[in-house]
Length: 506
Ligand SMILES: Nc1ncnc2c1ncn2[C@@H]1O[C@H](COP(=O)(O)OP(=O)(O)OP(=O)(O)O)[C@@H](O)[C@H]1O
Ligand SMILES: [Mg+2]
Image 1: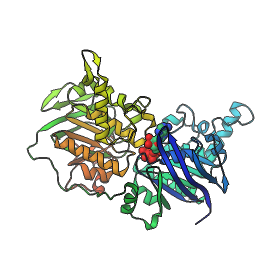
Image 2: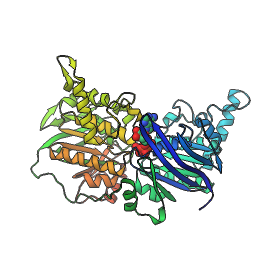
Image 3: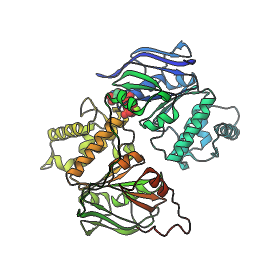
Image 4: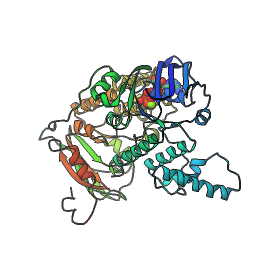
């Protein structure tokens, strides 16, 4: 064992009657990347919030650099060199990169002088991380990936010794993940220790030195990454093994009718896309971040205005000018952004599930609360939402379980077509499997699905056919039989340069 910088022992924490942590433990060595994994609700974020001073433990011991600590606020932890980068970034969009990094820290002299000084310091800091972001850029104009880098730079500026990253890649594209990994390796070399939470196991094998596994608030085991296997990890995490393989052939009957057709869809970002979806089909939408997949979905769903193009349902043109039109035509859209469009986090599970479905629970203008409860409970059971009751406030659920609430509420709608936008983002392997089963069940019941995903194994496992987008254009279509990660990637980076356009129109 190398030098231990953080040691947590017998950590217990309850919220009301819920034991989020029950004798959890963790050791972090100097200059290592320690992965932290476990199913949704296993207690990873809670444990890290205790380390970073957001919560205090009910009992147990936290040692930092050999001394027992009792942080009461994140500021105290930060002063001690422990910094947490949040799942939801903490930046102020309207301020510059430099202002965000040095916000709330006084420098002597006037405002202008401070700004110049801050910008210079920020520039040096970013340079030391080998990042090329001008310090006077407004943060809101940066990509999520760059914003995250700024957040990390901010952490480093406090001379942090320990950086905690809670699902840092959940919103990143492949190239951005590589950039993040480069920064992480660089920090490691400077002797900084990193705790890295992720549900993407491939990533953990790439970036971590060791991996600590948690289950139900308990410590399970810690393995050396170089000696561990994927199977072993999943086994420890969910207590059973889960098979993961590609779909061999399309499951769509040859004579299945087309339920949805999009013809020449054009908007600001979407450049003339046409495609169709068959009954009982799972149509995968692949592409890199910014390829236009979500934009396309929103146009189909009427959430954004299209400039041109027709939408046909069961062969007839339909008017979809807003989301109500889409819902009336049997289309549901499960948004990728659970905090933005998907959920009212300050309301209960019940309210969130019932909200878009009031008409199901109203008789003669009176809401039947018992029915609401029953329906919510049914959704909780079907999707496997881990919550003490349907009355729990959504913001108290773990990230993955919040995602399941989004899915639960749309399942009540009697839709024919479901657009799933990154349905398993932030969801653990076990729960992913449940969501896949759920999709398969929808298909079995004659529904059709469009699935947007950035995770190739998921696309290859679920889709009957895959469309690939790049910069708002449809660059490729692959049957599941011919699809491979390499082929998808090839189309995903097929930029619009002359001479390459011959097979573009779909
Ligand atoms: N503020 C809170 N109030 C009530 N319960 C909470 C609160 N914070 C966490 N919990 C509960 O504690 C348990 C652990 O949650 P935590 O967020 O630590 O899980 P996690 O391992 O980070 O999961 P995920 O992978 O989904 O992010 C969950 O059952 C969660 O609902
Ligand atoms: Mg979490």
